[in-house]
Image (tube, rainbow, N blue to C red):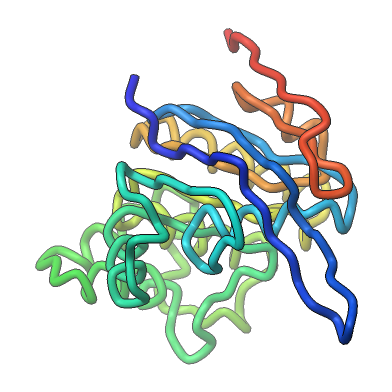
Length: 229
């Protein structure tokens, strides 16, 4: 299988006054197309920083990241934005829906920006799949947290991304609601053949993926691959 994400000797530091804080130090791993992958570790271990770098939202200090066959350091900001728009989906802990748009509009806008003529139909179909067929015209403020995250799921998959990054997707949800969202996430992911990368502190969630790396102090302390039934 083709490698969709290849990370080599990644290092990221931040300056705080006269001090330099190393957030990631010597990170290397690879993900093949269609795999499910988790990044776990305690708060402050560098999980979200690593996800942002892999998605081209921030720049590395040392090392290299190849995403969808492209070396990210060779792209300018416009090229990075184009790559994300065409190839990458995102799900965030805090949903990040546009408050002035309805559920249907939140899902259809990414498609309309890509010039897809059937944006409304695709958005409706996805909202139906996540159980929100009666919520098309509701605004985020009229939806529960679980419903908002389901809209975010539909939006993330609307452009049929090659790879989807999910940052603590159940972090703001209660256990029962979170389990339903995760079930939908994996169902849609399997149906569309997307590569899924999850950042989470939830070890039960991580165990649902084929590969798991554990971070501590900015380093990988374990790298697990398992065969899923």
